[in-house]
Image 1 (cartoon, one colour):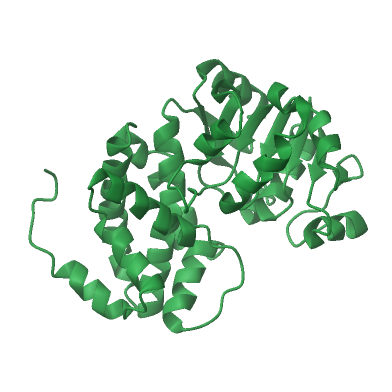
Image 2 (cartoon, helix red, strand yellow):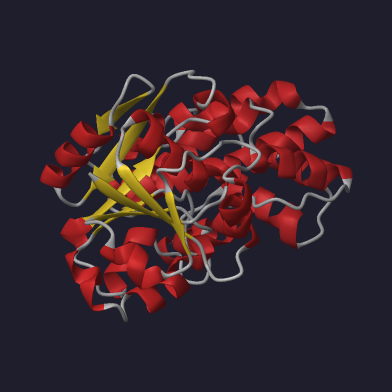
Length: 322
């Protein structure tokens, strides 16, 4: 099978390696012109995480990459999807492609899920899938297995992709709630930032409460947006908490910890933009997201983390489950 991978960051480079080394596909990886990540791969065939065999093709030519295969996997910053699609939809063959989104984020300027961005860009919704769930490249490349999920508007596409992508390294489950899968996957990064803040403040013991109440908060948002609230307790969200709220490999957890300590963090933390996106959705639905709001206030309003935490605990007493 021919596979095109758009993006060559940490997760994108792993997927390319996985599709070649584990699934034995014919893989082509694209990066933007002058992208230092792709330029380094062209020069050395490796990065900090994987080493590419010679069989993986590398290109800066977007049209060449799209023409390479019928399945196009996208792994870039969630906030860059709309811009990328503005270039893709100028290439005539794009309408024939199946797009698999591997980002865990929501567009912050609109509050829209990434599959909605693709639909607005002219992609047939039945040719869109999302690949989400727990896993770190550092563990996968040591051949430590994990479970993930593929979801779509099209059940037949889910079955096809799960059948073709599964291996002893990644066991894929078939999703049936793309709304919940996308929101849950993006929201887990927000909770990851919150977990890092707790770590940085010396309140790691509160992560259990964050997990329970965070999942409940996300479930309410998924339900309000028309999805299945149970998705928040599945692989797309709660099932990804270990990798996001506890792992030393988690960029979002690490960002939150460094933020409250006043230390710089230069790598991508998708949860920062997703916090804004979740609140945009919630405001349109007249829905409260107290944990998300608290994290947003700390990040954007220069609020003191301990003060915001105390305000969360000062909220009115209520039943755990209504």
